[in-house]
Image 1 (cartoon, one colour):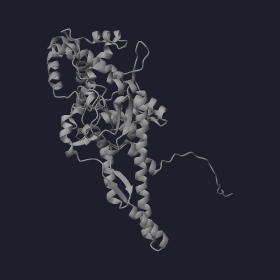
Image 2: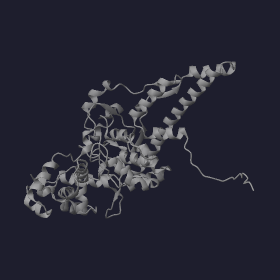
Image 3: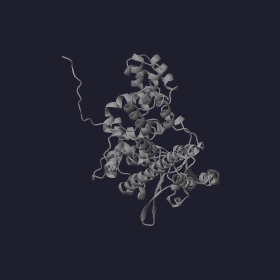
Length: 455
């Protein structure tokens, strides 16, 4: 008996992401410089796009920017500028950087053969790195839940990139990654790792014999590893970016005006993109005539493409407004009183408030800056984990780090404060932070130990 053909109907769920949605997500994640380049390229290939430049040339304001360069572009560097001098033109608040570490790593990621989900996870990890090249939190805290199963592969990809040592949790782990990259392995790698993790204070004091005894090896090997250590850099990300190569203008501003905080989106950061009315009129005429179908089709496609770009830019502005409004509400004390009042806030919490996916918040915050009365900050720096306080307040990890910086700088005892003493002072102020936590935060602030500060 011959087998007959059977027709079967089955229901299947399938998620398809439109080209427009993909383009919108890319626009959300893009920096101002990247968007300016995108707009330029689109305008060159699409005659119906009319670009109106709104940003003054940098040369007009460079002298004033230099004069006001007390503003800082990173949460952890330099003193804040005078809040009374906070009503400068947007262009004066520009932060200058060269090729960023993020750009350098993303270029390498584009050349790596891996699956889409691992690539997405690696991209999120790269955008989360700080200026030193370190990952400020566990990948599980940075990645959306759907990508948790890709965390190990993605982190391994990032840590294998140039410069060696990026993607580490801190400078000690970075030195160990660099040692692996340079071929150290086996017993030598074990001893080097223990040297970096546990013996650097003794190494600075020249206690070679004590280190050799502790690590169960001879003094010659410790001396050799010490010389090798000097060839490594504890902060691999810092070699990227050079002053005055390109300029980033803050995307949003939240400042005090009178008794209230005012949120502004910097509309001057990007040129205005419009439809050229001549071409829309031309299309109307062609539709009336009904003769030149090819020309009519061409114009329809170009107008549709231009409208798509305008829609993407509008969606980006709307997303920035929502993010800014949420930050103004949740970080109100920071904007009013300064960095010591920064509250713990995760991107997951922000996503729930705004009503979007956590990955969308990450894209919005990516490569964008906010101008405040206390300086210019990467938007990402306003997100951090919570540290417990005695009165149950929600205090940001970054605020605690700022407290530690102030405690050290304001110390007038004549003797550097130990990590335990700093922990005790924090406890008196209602902040619970163990000695090891203080040590970790101090290292992230690039502040030497009390022994080094005493020299």
